[in-house]
Length: 144
Image (cartoon, one colour):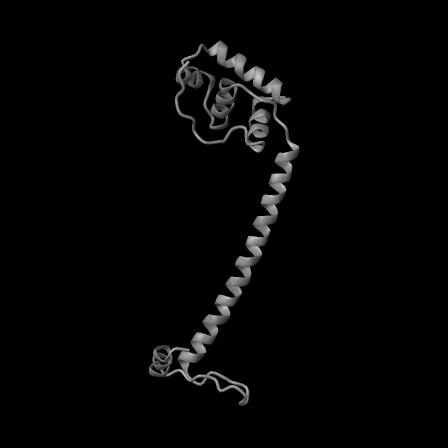
């Protein structure tokens, strides 16, 4: 340990444990406090490592499920209407944003649902998001 750190420890009133002596016990409030805080930090470190392990396992599960889930290729327009539905956009809102007729948006949505093999737009959105085909983030405007 560098001399500067040792001097700072001594100035703070901390006593370094002597190796080979009887079991060391904190002698001052500062030593007790640091020992307790060290235990708290060790517990937090263990909790964080467990959480990292749990999240890694979850990521592996999601990657495996995405590999199994296959969504057929969709055109940009079909992906756009599914993405719009994913953020809760209505057919009239999607039609206005994409500058399409409402009937055209309905057709795109219907085709996308069928192509994905879903029974509803909600299910199609869920499958498309799970497969990574679209995100549930607001989409920007697109021109025809």
